[in-house]
Image (cartoon, rainbow, N blue to C red; front, side, top):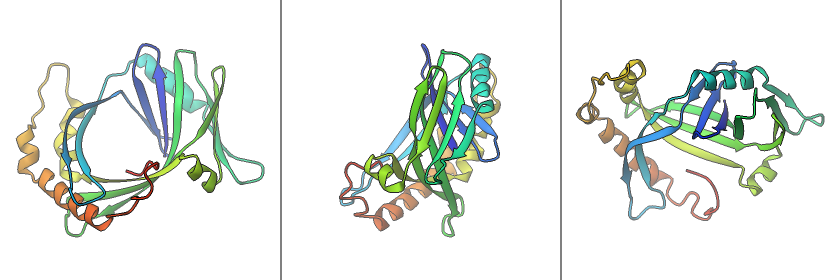
Length: 217
């Protein structure tokens, strides 16, 4: 999956997730609704449970992103050692700030049937710009690691939480969601995610301890 982060003049960043099959989804500026931080005193890693939503974007933004996707081309370098892409924007109002390539694997839990473990490799492309044209490339793994342009992410997702919050996608202006914070608590979402987070943090203790400059999270 390609992740394009763009900035609009006078607006915050919007993100577009592009899948391998060409489908894509635009996400407005991320807004943090609330978070619950878990601090494990005797462990290297901590954990955080975050509830976020996306800000609004306009039909004009949709057209601008459509142009980027239509012009998107992915290629392999002539020597076969690097992967790259090129695209262009429809105007100077939108500027591409970053492009990342994500490879993600999802595992279901046998103990916590409602939870999913998501492991991903993220590569931050080197971006060059000429007017409204952009090119990005991924270098050799060692070069990417030395430049801190590659990292790994681990996260836990709750199937119940997704089902509970699905109501948000169809809410109209002024409407009130059917769910409440108590709904999430009563369904055991927080309790289950905390238990699995504690187990993961315990098992990966000391992993990354000597990599303070890395982006692992």
